[in-house]
Length: 179
Image (cartoon, rainbow, N blue to C red; front, side, top):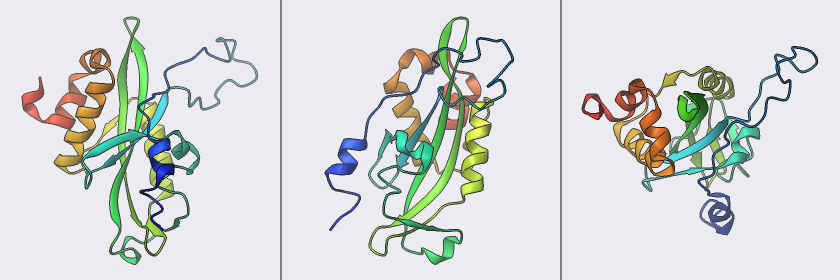
């Protein structure tokens, strides 16, 4: 039984992003102030082998279609035949009243569906999500093919958010010629 290529994965794939909703604290600074708000972050999976990217909100709780039924190990060498995925945290913020891709950070993940094992570093995933929420761009460790897939996905999702994003993001994903 192919766990990752069945209808469940197809159903999970979507292009929907979380975009800022109302501030639950309304700026009052009381109860709930300082709580991490995940309303403006979306997990995007980049699958370089298939040449695609997709959003799976289940990744916020490590329950994405890619992660289901997989026991993750902390040592990459224990999963030598794992298929590479990049879990990319994409945070959306507003400037000048328009949404843009503010934080984009990639985390490596490998999955071997035959042995139902995978590799990921949970502390890295949490830290990268935090960095994305803080508006950091951290994709330098991703391969060029994966960065190109991600850039194409973000542009297709919203050309306006892509154009309104910082030049740093364009250069990080597409190189110097992106201007």
